[in-house]
Length: 393
Ligand SMILES: Nc1nc2c(c(=O)[nH]1)N[C@H]1C(S)=C(S)[C@@H](COP(=O)(O)OP(=O)(O)OC[C@H]3O[C@@H](n4cnc5c(N)ncnc54)[C@H](O)[C@@H]3O)O[C@H]1N2
Ligand code: MOO
Image (cartoon, rainbow, N blue to C red):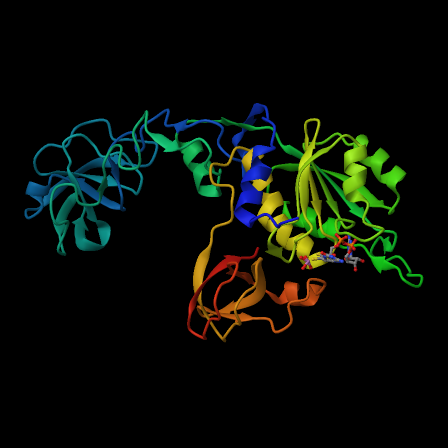
């Protein structure tokens, strides 16, 4: 069976996703989710011309002669009357400009004696100096965030200032996570011979914790076809992620168990290192993703497939991780037929690739800050050559 290229596997996986219903949530609950429709400004910001500095609102043409202070404008407490020639209004940052005034003298550049004000510095360059014009940030009706963009902290603040209290998003994605393997026991359990602490499910849960998910933990399942089948058939989730049992050994039962549980597998085995034996398909309304058991393989496939799948189901227009570029710190040999994701550390723009890339090695993964991406059959590369990298969280 030939191996599926990574990008083809990614698009086939996303095509398996069922539609996800929407909901409206208060701004505070929308962090990290994706906008389900364009976010349109309900108001203009600033709503009026405002002072950008603490000082005095005046008419620019008046600045060279002494002026008379006639009142005060503070944020939330505007000065009601217009400013006539020769007059000034004490004003503070964020306060509304009084009618008639067209610039602000900063208070460090004036001398004040009673109500008499004199310019004692350079002053503003022209009309509009130190003034934030009405609509400087945005105008009512502007599209501020497009549907499918992520609701970052800055975009949430923008939505609030634009007049929204709640936003339409997709409902959270339910992700069931199962570890499989007779050798696995929960971390901290005293180990009998041949047993191993189970670490993939907590790693995957942590890896998707910044996404809008509800995690359904299925625990550790044994390498038994009947138990796996029953557990998979009972899953109530949008995505079922398994780790382990994905390869070709006699105890690798995830594929037959998924099929017995009613899943139709779409693909199995990818031109990817680490992570080759990954499989994906649909079980009724659930997308199933069978990840390899090796911890680094589970990590890389979660990064390349699970996170983008969740993002796409949650409404992201750009669900895949962004590739950056960096220079190699040392030479690399030519690559084979699989896209290779090498554990590496980025230091001052140079990537240093770990010498041993075994997919069982969690310590190397834990030290790494990025993955160097090597295309199939990439020729050998020299120190200083530019390569694609994916930053790790
Ligand atoms: N004859 C072949 N053998 C293997 C092939 C192949 O093509 N032909 N592929 C290799 C590749 S590549 C990978 S990756 C692994 C993946 O195999 P499985 O998905 O079946 O994984 P397991 O055998 O169940 O486990 C592998 C390894 O990882 C440990 N493990 C599993 N689950 C966890 C967990 N939840 N937490 C911590 N550690 C876990 C497990 O004990 C094994 O040591 O297959 C190769 N073999
Ligand atoms: O693809 Mo496996 O993930 O090489 O170790």
